[in-house]
Amino acid sequence: MRIVLFTGKGGVGKTTVASATALRIAASGAKTLVMSTDPAHSLADAFDVELGPESLEVAPCLWAEQIDPQRQLEDSWQDIQKHAMEVLNWAGLNEVESEELALIPGLDEVFSLADVKRHHDEGTYDVVVVDCAPTGETLRLLSLPDVISWYMERIFPVERRVMGVIRPVAKKVTSLPLPGEEVYGAVRRFYDRLDGVRRILTDGAVTSVRLVVNPEKMVIAEAKRTFTYLNLFGYRVDALVANRLLPEEITDPYFERWKKLQTEHLATIHDAFAPVPILTARLRDTELIGTDLLADVGREVYGELGAADVLYEDDPMTVRRRGDGYVLVLRLPFATHDDLELSTKIDELFVKVGPYRRTIMLPRVLASKSITSAKLAGDRIEMVFDPRDAAERSDQR
Image 1 (cartoon, one colour):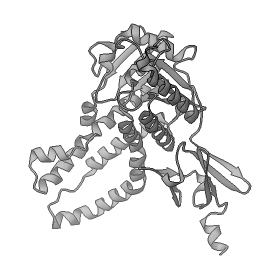
Image 2 (tube, one colour):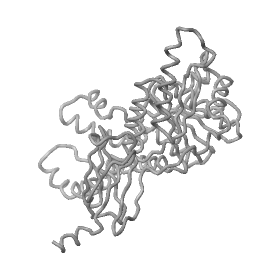
Image 3 (cartoon, helix red, strand yellow):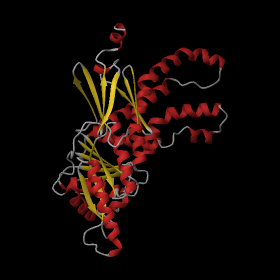
Image 4 (cartoon, rainbow, N blue to C red):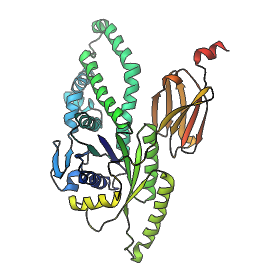
């Protein structure tokens, strides 16, 4: 199965491009699903049909759905929410306040990604095209599995064991509701679902991300930041779609300045994101609603390319030998020295770029080794690791 994710700054036309891509793929005969994880849900508007959580055939070989994240939330969060409400009630809040505060804002959107994994596991479709939320929301969702992974692997097992020991004593000295095994079981199930999503979405042979941009300075700047953060978390961008380009036939003097600016911005996009392919779509003189118009956009964007193909391959993280030691290379396009913070602790590498932080579990060959040097070379940071592990370094002092 192939999974293609579309994201971009709000209003750039990502729903249109995602829908056009899905139609293009379906036209090749591949059984295709296009789904939306954007709370705004514009997919139904694009196809001019009513959509819900159950897939509906909207064209030959193409099905569409707008998932119900609330249903996913209720299935996976119920036991955790119940315990949180008990604690909040104990603290003096009423039922309504407790119920509101027991839900983490945006959590329902996280579970929308679980449906991507479900479709992958079921294998009903050849290709799944996902119309994601605007970039800020998408990055928050895609980074969450890494954050939770660190907690689940480092803190959760210890917390669970400690709670098992102190629960009998704590019950004698406090009335505070303590989490039981059903709560910890719910947390583990919650993590397992998200971790499965992460494995699928970071598999370059399965999943690609495509950024939709307009030839505008602010949109390009956000696309650069998004590209950096996607690479940080191991997601592979295989194309950009420059959307709403003014066509050559527009010759009205009023638009001359706009055309010149667009030409300059398009050149910036090509220079900045090369060698990632840049696909284009012109601004149309009508609303792009319905399968006929969307199919025409798909033909324009992809031309002779296979819309479901992996259009560009690159590995965001590689490890290679250098002399007696090892070099870990992270692809972080557009990052600067001022953006970056690096540190290691035993078998973990901590990387912070701007507001985003990722904890990377180091390969076994690098565990317990320290970074001797790091340099930013082009769009990649190279970290050289001491060939000796911690014990060897201690013996040689």
